[in-house]
Length: 367
Image 1 (cartoon, helix red, strand yellow):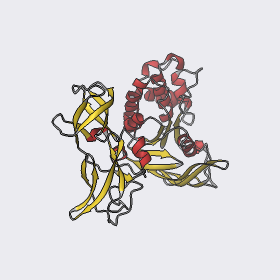
Image 2 (cartoon, helix red, strand yellow):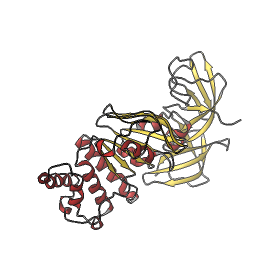
Image 3 (cartoon, helix red, strand yellow):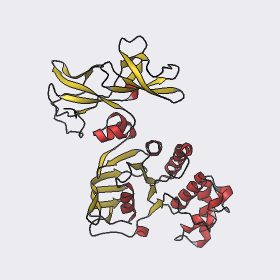
Image 4 (cartoon, helix red, strand yellow):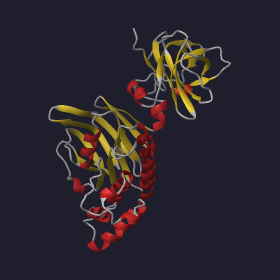
C-alpha cells in the first residue's frame, strides 16, 4: 500500500531525513516513532502531499505520487489525515463535520454515511453536538470518523492522542486500532510515545539522526534492537561490560553476571543486521570488549542466589517494583522488575539471577 524508496527530505538546504526505505502492506498499521525534531511530521506531510521530496520516491498502491519532479496533489492521493489538534470545525455540529469530508459523495447519501461512521466510533448520540461539548476522547473519535468516511486508501495520524490525558491515551489507541482493523484501512501513525506505538502498530520505525534506525515489530525492537540508539530508546535497560571468548563449542561473552552463549557463529556469512553485534553477524574478534544489553526482565529476584546486588533506587508500579541495582564491583548497574511483595528499601541487598534469552551486544564504548 505504501512504499518509501530511498526517500530524502529537506527544508531548503537543511537535511531532515536521509535514505528512508519503508513498506507498509495493505491493512497494516505502521508507526513512525522518535524524539521531537527527528522528522516524523515532515515525513507524514510528504506522504500526504504537503511537503516536496528532495530525492527518492513515495508510492501508494505502486503508483508514484512523489519524487523530485512529481508531487501529486493531496486531494488526488485518496489519503485521509487526522491532525494533532483534530481540526474539527467549531461552528459545525459533529455530523456536519463528518459530512464535510464527503463532498465528493452525492448530497442525498452524505447524511446516511455520516451517521454510519459516527455509529462506528460510538458517537451516534452526539451527532447534533458541537466540538466544544465533547470530551477530548470523543473529539478524537469524531476526527477519525470524518477521516475514514470517504474510505481513504491510506490513513495518516499525526500525534493523534497527544492532547488526551495520559491515562486515556492507551485505551483510546486500542479502540482506534480495533476500528481501523475492522474497516480494513492501512494507516501510518506518528508519535513520540512508545505506549501509543505499541498499542496501535503492527510495524514501528524508530527515527533518529535523520535515519530510520529500524523498521520492525515492537517485539524485535525491544528484544533484538539493531542499533545502540534503538536499544536505549525502546523500553528500559542498562549495559554491562563483557568480553568475547571463542571456545571449541562456540562463542561466548563473559560478564560479571555469568557467561552468555552467543546464538550464532561469529564467522557467519549472513548479512549483518546493523550496528548490533548479535544474531546473524558479529564482526568482532576473540577477546574484544563489548557492552551487553540487560533488560529489567533479564534479572530475576532470587533470595537464595549467592550473587547479591544493592538497591540504589526503586519505583513502585503496583504489582511490581522496578529496582535499580549496583553489582558487586559497584561500577555497573542493572534494572530488576520484581513482584512487589519482594519489598526492599534503598541500601538493602538481595539475591539475583541472570536469565537472558536474547543476547544483544555492541562494540564497547569504554576505553
